[in-house]
Structure formats: structure tokens, C-alpha cells
Length: 306
Length: 306
Image (cartoon, rainbow over all chains, first blue to last red; front, side, top):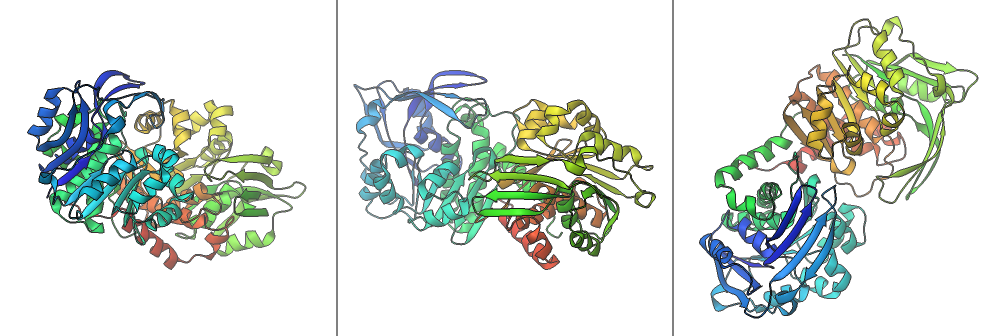
């Protein structure tokens, strides 16, 4: 089944305790596309880039099955650029530079060829942009998933609440879940957020794994204990891409299958952080992924009877 | 099989965002004993209390199978007293008062009747006291587990390292594992700590669950997502008590069985935090525990094949 992916395609400067990268390819949409195409080839990308975005990167994505009809190339502007520096704990970071460039007045137009897609993955972007995509779809997709961040809670809460009310799955991290719900307990936060519209809530906890909430059910997914997180940039987007990609591959949007989709997303995210940017996502094979998925299973496996 | 439990028995004043408790029964040894006796009746307690420690509490522990031959009652001194206040996140706390009292010159004497115990659980105490217990045992127990805290890393590191080198299982939380190993990555921290003596390392992460490391193997145990943590005091001790109690019940100290022991400890700890002090541990039945263990299984359960 096909997925519309909406998200930024950008340049990143990243500094971690392990090194620096200089203007590498990044952006939520890029990571989501590289992750989702590990499971499905029908990815319909919605994004905007400037004249400086490398053509070979667009070709590489096309080669992997990503449709580019709605990736606007603005001839007289630069691509979105972000520079950040991670602290030693790799969980917190400082944003050093944000240059919106082409993203400043991004108004996505959904082409006729994208209509009828079964899945919609709204990567982290202005809620008004995410909303405009939903409103342009003639038939509502079977499943709409939305990723967002605390920034939009600070500057555009009413729009964010509106778009959240229209989606099936919301993905946020633990501090964002707390901010959005004004509840410290994640169980209470989940209950509040599920009352705002989404039927499913995924709370990403980085090195502590992820939680999936649906009605009165909870699933706890582990994170792979890693020797070293080399670069956490894009891990959340990669998780989202693996999650939606697995759902689209299987066509099954039950709670049981979402658990497996979360493991798929977690496995891809665990690769993503091993090298700078999208490097690792481009290298891995389906064999690597199956192997990692087995490692995830072994992590939490124990005999049932105590 | 029988367990020697070494740990404080004390009074606590606890303040949480949900309320205050006034001089309730606490102490690592108390929590460990209440937890371990959920699985075995042969618990041989080593502790010290003052004239003020309630006789009915000692009787209640005896009723549950706890031998009191090495619980010294000092007639002219008060019991150990600790007062603390939890922050809103329930993960951090300020110590308001520490009165060592009888614990100040606690020199445990292991009676003849305790010799030959198969398991030894050293609760958080001065490393020199923990070491003196090991040295008094004529036959080394099959398994020695040790719980400690950052305080001893600050003030008694050489003694702590000595006692750590003599145990089979070390239990610490994530920040303590990082402090002890001078490694930020928990995988690297575990490798370093396992080279210091213990064959097994358990890293407790509170609301994020626990990790078990052994050789090149890892097990990730979830924590139960809770509506509210009412009082986290004693959760780590309860975890330790449930862990060692389950191992003693089954007599199996394999890595596979330790996973199950960690689930047993996690289940008991999830009860402990529901009410102040040891209240909840005194109420629960083996049926409640079985039910909670099933909940833990369901939390992480998903179909194997992706």
C-alpha cells in the first residue's frame, strides 16, 4: 500500500562528542523516506528544497521508489538548514542555527497522482502545513500519523490541537506528551491525549524505548542498549518512517500489528544513530533489519511462567 | 532455599506531592524482607534497631518467616531515622534528616544458625559492614547479591570496590552505574563493572525498567506504566527482595531464570510504590503477584515474526 510522506528535506550541521558533520543531508522527510522504503516502494514525497539540494540525493530516493511529483524545487532560494550541537548525554542538544529558507512559505500542493494513498505520514512541520495536506486529500487515508515537537506547542497550540484532532496516531517524546497534556504521569498524559482525537499514541523515550497507548492497552517497546550513540539526529523521524512503512507493507492497522510496527521503527532507529545523518540507513539490507528485529525480540524475551 | 538479608530497619518521614507520612517503618532490610517472604519463608535477617522500634513490626516479620536471631535491639539508642522530600518528578529527592543512631556503630554478628544459607542479599549499607558479613560466612553462599548507592562511591570507594569484587550480582541505578564506571554509555559501563568482579549486573532505571547484563548478554525488563507513583521509597529494596526471593524459591541462578527473577522484583516494586512505606507489600497476596506478573508479560508481548 502507498504512503504520502510530508516533511522537510534539508541540510544539517551536526556536532556530537564524537565529531562534526558539515552540511550533510537531513530533514524529517528525508529520514522518513529512507526508512519507509525499507518496507514499501510506494512512497509519495511532499516537500520543498532549494537550488542547492543535490540532484544525486533526489535520484537516490527515486531509485528507492520515492515519487517526487510533490517535491518542489525553488530555483532562487536555499534549502532549509539546521545546525545543532549535542551535549554529552546525547539526549539534549542546542540549536545553533535555523535558516528556514524555502520552508518559510512552504505551501504543499497534493497532485492528482497522490490521491487515494492509504497512509499519510505527517512529519514534524508547522501544524497549518500538516492540516493543509489533510484537507487536500479527497478520500481520507486509512491511517494518518503525525509527528510534532514542543516548538509547535509553544507557538501554534490551537492549530496543533486542530490537526491532532484529525489524526489516528500521534508520535511525541515523553516531555512533549507531558507538555501537551499538562500531566506528569505518562499514563494520565496518554489518557488526556487520546481524548483529543488520536486513537493511538506513541511516546518515544529515546534510550528508554517507546510506549504505545490505545484505549486501555499499553505496549512497552525496548530500545537496544548501544555501545555508543554516534548521532541521534533523525532517529525519531526514522522510527516514524519504519513504523508507517511496516504498516503499509502489511496493510494491518490493528493494535497487535502496531506493536510490530514499533519494533520495526525501533530497529531502523537503532541503525540510524550508528553513523552521521542518513549514512547507515543507505547501507543496511533487509537481512540486517531482520537480524536486528531478532535482537529486539531476544532483549525482552523470557519464559512466561514464573 | 534460605536467604540471609542484611539491611537497615528504620523509621522514615516521607513527603511526596501526594502527602506526608510520619515516622513510618522503613529501611532497606525491612523492604527486602517483606518482598523476599512473598516467595520463601527462610529469611534470616541481619539488622539493628533501637528501643523505639515497634515490637509488633518484628512479630509481623517473624510471622512471615523472618528469623530475628541477628536483629540486635539496642536498649539505650534510637533506630535509624531518615526524612526526605520527593520532587514533582518522583525520581529526585532531597534528604532532609539522617540520624544514624544505632546504625552508627553497627557490627553485625552472624550466628551459627545462619551458616550454610545458600543466598546472601546485602542491602544498601556501609561497604565495610557488607564485607564483614561475607567474611563471617564459613561456606560461601551460592549467590551473593549487593545493593549500594552513590553515597558510598563518594565516601568509601576502595571498600566498595573490595566488596563488589566478591559478589555475584551488583544492583545499582543508571546514574550510579555511570559514576562507578566513569562511562556514560550503559553498555560500556556494564562491561567495566563486570570486569570488577560481579558476573551479573542489574541497572535499575525506575519508571524506565531495568537492565540485566551477563557476559555478552542483555535483558531489558519493562516497568509498569503507572497512573501515579504514590511513594517511591523502598522500591529498589523491594525489587532486590523480590529478585533474591524468587531465585531462592527456584534454586536456579541461570541467566534465563534471573530474567524471571527481575520480573518478580519489578512486579513487587510496582506494588510498593502504590502506597506509603511497606503498606502495600503487607496487603498483597500471591494471587495479586501472579496477576501483576501476567500484566508485565503482556506489556512487552508481540508476535515474533515481523
